[in-house]
Length: 160
Picture 1 (cartoon, rainbow, N blue to C red):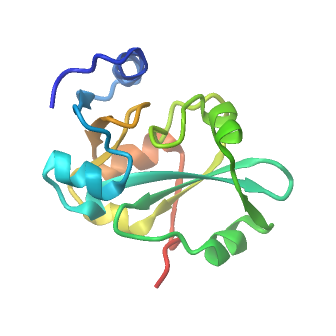
Picture 2: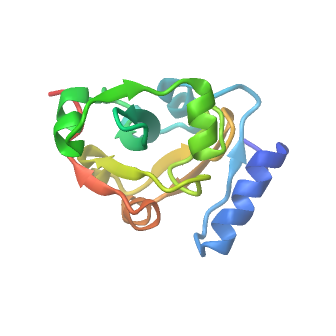
């Protein structure tokens, strides 16, 4: 782990500082695109990794689901929460909605506001780790900070 070199990760560190979040973005030599890759690089449990998944609602809005790295999102449950059908968001939609590329989407600080749900399983950990704007940059935070800064609603969003 090292201090961020990528301009996007450096900019995200500045955003975290401006938000009053006391944490340090760290970068890895290797990409941490998957939750398992990130957990291995950090040395934490895969469940402590926050996956930022973007969906596109039938009405064309972006929807963010922050889920534990050890879980899969149950799209039927999320659809029931949202009240409309969900579709996959392509790379262009994700970048437009968030300002970030797939694989590096952080849990907050996006280009546009989106309805956000947080996997209840993330709340059990003392520390969790999320992407910081690039596929090989992450930062740590508490579940309470995730809820507060993402304006997300904790919910049962994972497959049983």
